[in-house]
Length: 185
Image (cartoon, rainbow, N blue to C red; front, side, top):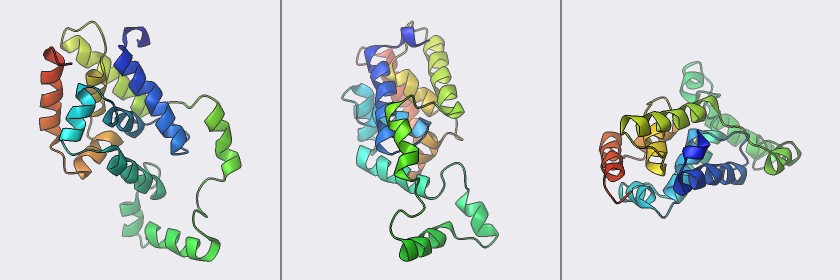
């Protein structure tokens, strides 16, 4: 599949790996690919920024989700049984210092040097990008196809982050499809 990726799509994947490393994450998720695309200097990066998504805002949202446990711990579910994850973190950091609940540096360093795996949802989003290219009868997989894959499923963290930022996801999808079928892509 990767042999069909254009340079901009390959850059999104390698950029996602760099973003995951910079955020000290153990896996590359849909959010990291979205973050890389937001910083791209191509039509898709511009479209994301025009819809109000900036790298700084998105990175802050990802950090907040990671601190709340990301997809692993559902802070709303915990709150429903009387556990306030934010209060636990705040109390722990007051007692033991900032970042006391973060992964110790020694445990994450091996991920900085070696391979960082994609999450199953990120793999699915890349596969959906291929399907979007096929559906649009395009032989190459571009960054826009990857973006459509990232926005395909409301259960993907990338889609939830875009929605949280106040972006009209359907309007963004429409613009991406338009760009992919025009010469601007």
